[in-house]
Image 1 (cartoon, rainbow, N blue to C red):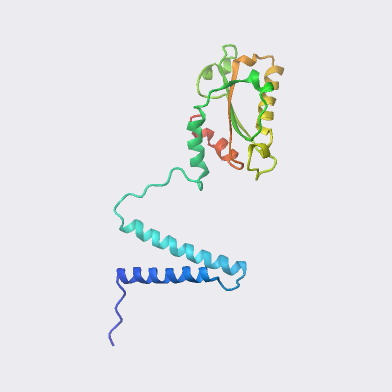
Image 2 (tube, rainbow, N blue to C red; image 1 turned 90 degrees about the vertical axis):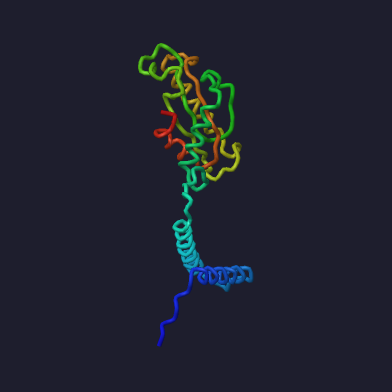
Length: 198
């Protein structure tokens, strides 16, 4: 008895297309009642199949498959993009913080432009800050700057108080800040060691 022939590439593609269309119809009609565990199991199976198909595409496609550099799924890449846009902001004087209260959480950098503090002189008047930090909102799911509160302003205000307490000249210090999406503060701050902040 002759063995059945293996399906060709085109036949397999046709079968995948047919059954995928059928799956979409089933979903549109409404899946039968399933537990969360059953739905999760089916989702994982679909993910494995999707990854296998993607692997086949990468194998037969002669074009080079680059890694997406900027994606919401890659906080480190967003942090890289942010790092370069951050330095485009005009720095402000630490002396002005007290009278310029604002809402929002995010990240900040402090710069030295003076001539009197030896440890800071190698960084004086450069784009390299002497300190980079973050301020996170109490409500980690806050969607607006108002809901995030004044945590970033308060953090900068604490630095201002420390400078004054140390007998230093506020005019020798500048800062940049950026209000960013809740939850992204840590990713951006952690990136500072590999970014243009250093």
